[in-house]
Image (cartoon, rainbow, N blue to C red; front, side):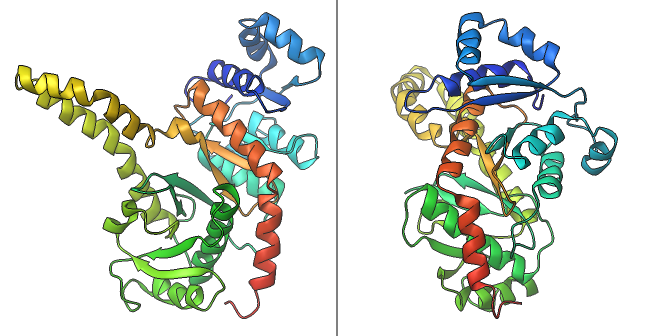
Length: 335
């Protein structure tokens, strides 16, 4: 029931994921059953076929946490929300992952409360893959924890490194700390102390990077607190629309300019595709005892589909189990 266009796009995206060749996912749609059934009726043959083979089920959840609801208050007053019931289903082992494009704060809080934190994790975090001149880079934290201690930033580095190595196939991801200068002494108190922790860790820590360095593609994981990370992420999300507006304005200056833009159009689409959030689907919540993927409120069916496929991959790669193993092994001597 989460997202600006739910449940229509969620149902369509889920069916699209189930129809993806090479994947054998089963989906449980959690929400107001009458509304979900109405959307499934738009795809009668496909829905019936999936139900007959046990790959599609609907679980009724009468409450809906809206985008404007305060997360903690809503979780208390709307105990039978689709978010809470969906996560309980995951916790009970009836599902191996949870996906939602709903209220981000509510998904974060409910995932932490219901699934619990992994041992050795002080703060669960979300990481967002952003395009660079080379391969994607994981920005972590990208909006969960606005105030962080050095230990938290260290954990983000560990979880981010493992996520990139597991999901992107990089054996020794380069981990960097986002700061106001490359020197070890640059930054606020938390980042300076986090530098020391990351430096003596077993991570492939390469030091500080500045904001201008992120898109160069020279590092694989950029560590920062959620306040800075979310600002950087939202700024990056504005770049495609900015470039499109500039191209359109240039095209209006004359016939030759218009022809130039038309010629560059296909190339521009290919480049900007890497910056489309729909391709990634959603961001993983790392550090909880399970798989929880959080999507954009404006998610399309394509974004929902890719969220589900990402959750499937995280389950197959045992990402949260590996995080717990590594953090527990490296926890000695870290304060």
